[in-house]
Image (cartoon, rainbow, N blue to C red):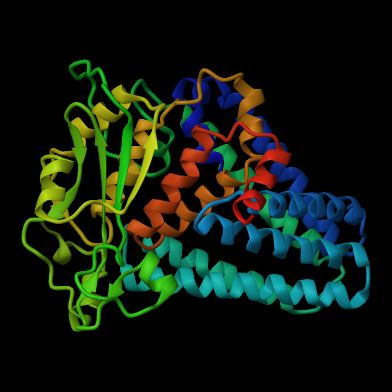
Length: 426
């Protein structure tokens, strides 16, 4: 969440705010450590009921906005709001059985997440996969720590969980503050955190005057399948669709900005995507790198294939930052199904285009306001899943929609946003 918020505010804001971020990170980690010790020692100084009340309000607000959400965001809002509501009720009930249920709930969540992270790291073998694999092991260890009734018999579950989350968040904040001093003109926050994903930005390019909006084109796996796909809702949307003949369709993503930027990366020679070879091609290893080629324009690509079935239009963006990114990125035409594919190219291009797009807002006031927008949480979760496995057109679609909601927020009151879905049902 912090990375995306800093990206939208721009490199200048990050450099100027680096000392404040460092101090906040240290204080946040220290507070988290004291809360964690509170849970371990069973002293219960932490105001559980206040935290439970705040969590209840958060869940109700999320459920309130879920009615006006679109697509997959509606399901995410309902899921997040429902889980938070259930946790808040358990906290406010204050029963002994509630502590046990919370320990089981959080333990299973960390255990399943840890297994998923380890499995994806082992299968995909992307850059830094060993470090991520060890992070998955750490999540399994923390899950076992929550399961075991020692030393507080589950009384400190909330304090232990909240403390660990705050410690990790504070450490990340300090890391960002330390690295922010290395930011230079034309760089983004993701150049610091993931230098391999975003290539160095070209120092100077010819000025480009955009003549229209920035458009994210998505060909979903189901929409681009030649024959009727086998119905598998989640897999078809986020991974790949298999038609009745057994042919796999992964979909496609592209970015268009007039007059002459079009990011659409394809393998020069079609990759064998049969079920017997698909598992092997998922590995982000050098052996799976193939020659890639960038398409010339959306018009020529659509004429040779089909029109995109999803479009997300951005009216506000940083055209010069996108041009600097594209000038350097297109120098390498390597294609890899996992770590350098059509969707990852579009994702990093879009992030470059949104660098500092909110810098004209009211500084720290708007920066803090971003953290109260549920779309920021959605975008962060989507990006985390994509970078620990692979960018897919389905993930790119939801990620672009979440970023669009942050850059172009709905200008309606709460009542109007709640009333809209009611009007559509009448």
